[in-house]
Length: 410
Ligand SMILES: *Cc1c(COP(=O)(O)O)cnc(C)c1O
Image 1 (cartoon, rainbow, N blue to C red):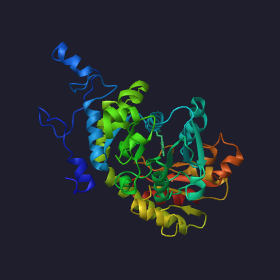
Image 2: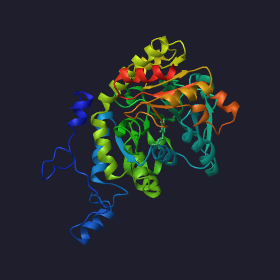
Image 3: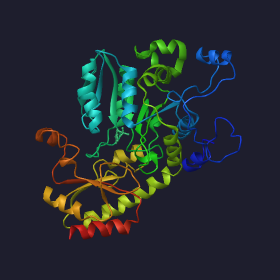
Image 4: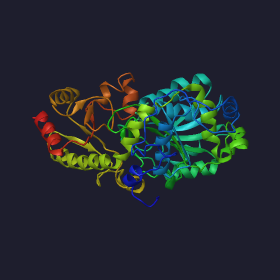
């Protein structure tokens, strides 16, 4: 099965148990609890001697189906589905860190991830050292005996910068650190994380995987490449669960006790999202390239940013890691904030909204929205300018998108 293409594999992924009706679509188990045949059986379950679903906050057949499908598609060791991208990130960090530990993270991060690292975790004694991600010496200088991981985003947003993952994995290997990638921008049909020794992926499945902004979700993907006995916060789980220590700690402790559960309804929609993921990403990419061509030729547009363009400084990395498809978000500049607003206000098809990788094309002015709470200097340092717009390219017919942009510029 593993040699088949992404979409074939997704559509034909097996069921953990045969369906009594031979349904072709995995059923939606909208239930909280599950019955046991007798008192001995439920007791055996609680003692860990008999495996079964018990209570859907900890596991549910439809959610399990989504996890197994994602596991197969990413060729990974284990997958845990959770309620959102932020749940994936927070559960992962809570599992590997304790008070006085630290991690190293890229400077350009999704806003709420940055706030988690900068505001929330320090209150629990966990420090983040922010760094550029291309200079090996800069990163290595930050490593100390309490450093547990390097965390980065595969493509930063809206800067659209790509980290050189091979440098990060080399440092991690040398210092026994876990390498965690937020790969939300580069879904598993374009990014094979385990080929580049990313140990754990965290994903906001709300974005591409949900199938078009249908539901919130997140996934934690363990690629099985990290020796969990090297992390003192996981080592007791290694004694009992071996290679499965990280997922076991999540399931038996962090995830179970913080309650960031994916619902069965969500898992059903997201499984269907996986089936058409490759089709949608390919269409978004084609639209992206067509739009770049149009935007670059338009006299009012400056600085078209898309790392999938051969002229981009990031193109080499985009080819190396993402098969030339570094997500489907692009940026461009107009003359001023006023021009950006006027342009946005006259769009008829492209929606003014703060999401990514919907089936619909979405536009936002990051400077006055997502980053508005940051002081001017911090925004400048993050390369967020008042003339820049971010466009998340959807699957519409591209001539309609071009027409919408052309008439809104005139
Ligand atoms: C959206 C996003 C998140 C957060 O995901 P939610 O599902 O909204 O919690 C995290 N990282 C990246 C890169 C994102 O784009």
